[in-house]
Length: 341
Image (cartoon, rainbow, N blue to C red; front, side, top):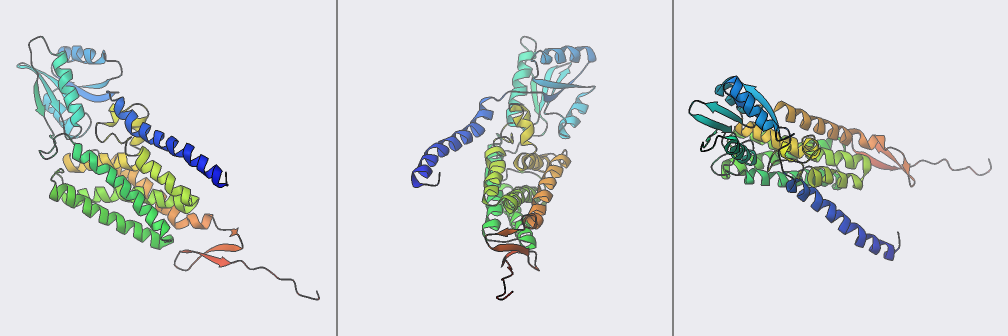
């Protein structure tokens, strides 16, 4: 469809389709929130905890239950991010341990489940082991910070590409932009709003690594695919990465395989890393760091070498690498026939 009429028809059809897909990506996961193999614990006398675990198991596929011998062991598992909370049977009555810093939505769910499984007339005691900060008790501010972070990665990656930066210069620009994003992110969320509670520089590093993973992916895809690579990078960061991250609830609350997929994308792994360093002393941070590092190294490698892979003659020009690593267009050399030969 190269004619004006064909382009008009394509726009009329494609724009609503894209918007429909975007709405589905953002709305569908939140419309189907429910626990799916949610890691929780039970603690107390073995016979009693076995019965409680059986009752929780009656909600088929909802909970992944681990038994702990003591309440302190269950607390340690929560602090290490092995589980989201635990149901404790004590001589004084039932107790539920939660971690609203990990997910306020899950903390409310476990509180309701404890009341549902308690004996008639018994009211469970709620103990928030790792509480969300008073400035953000529902986690909404932290959740809202991830969309700008995803957009920042797309903007940085697209900006480097559109400015014509290549090779080592593009890598320096991406790293510098991500560092600035990290400093700004920590300054706003920690110093100003107070919604994070970890080490300032570690939080800045989490913001920076997340932004760098996203921007490197966009710039790397653009180096190989051209302009369509920017669109693909934006889809991975914004249209899939943000709604599939589970940052406003929990990955285990999202429909399958959305929750698992989101944790392999920069925004989802970045959100988990930020929670770990901000509220859990870095526990369970190694997995997200590894995921973000893979995205970063893969993207920067494509930025450095993607243009060389595309080297060839196009429309009378040949693509060659300059001394500084930039990809430069040079006139193609053609041997002209000599008269009289």
